[in-house]
Every structure is written in C-alpha cells, then in structure tokens.
Amino acid sequence: MGIQFSPTISTNGDDAVYYILGKSLASGQGYHDIHLVHSPVTSSYPVVFPAFLAITHFFTDTPLLAKILTMCLGCLLTLASLYLFRI
Figure 1 (cartoon, rainbow, N blue to C red):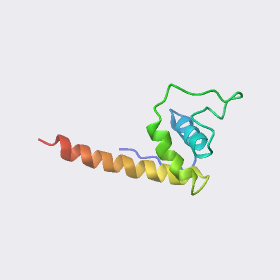
Figure 2: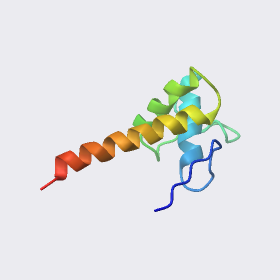
Figure 3: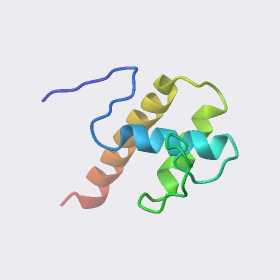
Figure 4: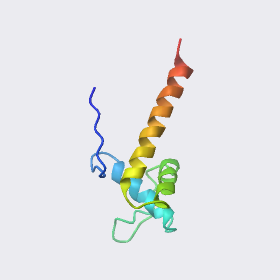
C-alpha cells in the first residue's frame, strides 16, 4: 500500500479544483472558478466538499490544513463504512 502526503496541491485529479472552489466560497465570490479569466460559475462539481474546504480558508491560506482535514474525514468515513457494512 502506498501513501503519499505532500503539503502542496496536486494537479492530478480534482484536488486543485475543489481547493479553488473552497477559496472562492470563503472569499465571498460565490461558486466560481476564480482561477479562470472571467470567473465563470461552475456546475460540474457538487458544493458540499468545497464548502467543507472553505472552512480551512478562514484559518490559513496554505493547503496543508485542508489536506489534513480531508485525510481525517477519509479515515472517519472508512471506519464508518467498516462498521456499517460488516457482516
């Protein structure tokens, strides 16, 4: 099993998109792709996880706290799934 934890945002997958959408929500700009030129409203990602990440932007602008919070949430959901689906 390989585990990778880096304090920077990865451009593989949706990591950066969710982080940027969370930053947009935390800064009061709405649910917009603020990394694009005209900041269009996004509709291809659900709002729950970026809203969860927006909480971390109130404490710090570094992605490390968001990654730690995501890792803890993943562990909690794995444990909850284990207890829910055990036979």
